[in-house]
Length: 169
View 1 (spheres, rainbow, N blue to C red):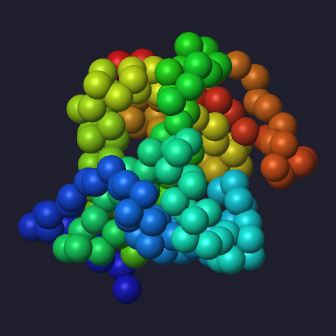
View 2 (cartoon, rainbow, N blue to C red):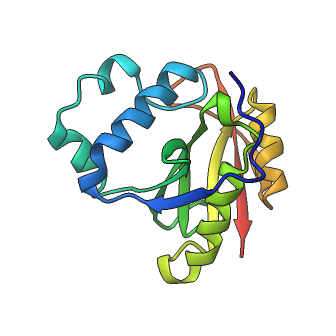
């Protein structure tokens, strides 16, 4: 069932902590089950992660989640780093539940990230997106990202290529 009456729905955006690891696990496994071709990681491996392994991911990455009516429906991870084309952080794992696409959840995530960018060091945001994922490229362009450089072969998915995209605030 596609949910499309979002005008009166409240979207909440939260930056998860390691104590929220069950929420991360549930969203991440749903994402890998739904979109294995476009996300790094393997469902069979991550399904077997222990609580300690899930908590460990928070040492390197921040996770931003959008919820609608208390249900987690979209997520992205953020790594602070010095990256390509001056990026101060690298985004990954953007996914939204297919039933909630076009709900405003992804927009809410990017609005949140922009609102905390200077405090969190996220002023130049970079990401990689598979060249075959034209819908994601269009979404990223809508939120101010532009392709930079040449396409790059994926180390995790040899024979597949991605574009680097950058947004400066």
